[in-house]
Picture (cartoon, rainbow, N blue to C red):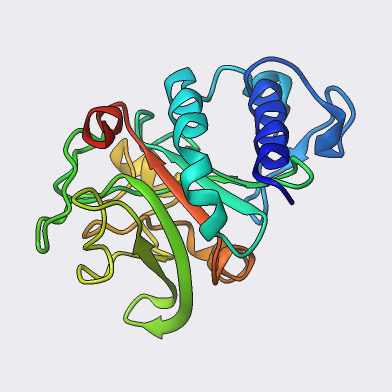
Length: 223
């Protein structure tokens, strides 16, 4: 599908998420839309204020340069301007506009407590990295079912492979952890997700889909 058509669909998706329900999400107005394997659901009308407008602007400015690298029609967006207690990860089918997942995701230990503040591309920093990634191969490691990530932006995230920044499940990414600690647990820089969705989530986005991790500081780093 041509890049412009992808952008048009993503724009409609963004407008839908920011303002009103839209039928391409396969839901009637007011009908709950399930969030993958997570236990709760959300209404599109209640979801209207959850995406950062600057994220949308940044995505549309830079997506055309990375979209040709993708081998499928899925994009995952993480908004680290939101606290860890929020469902700040979205996976969207660019062809249909369907939201496949909206879930919790952890940031790095040295990136911040509940709020993500510091980011790094340096090994052993234990900080998250921003920008565009391409998903790679699935493997089984110390965190179980995991997904390799290739950073696509020089000096922003291109050391992700060397740093072993991967998507994996973690017990500290849960509503129960939030209730006990007031925030999610933190990783060594990996975007860790709820363990109960890990296998299905990784299967959905593996081997060539785009991941975009955003924070307002990204706009300065990317120029």
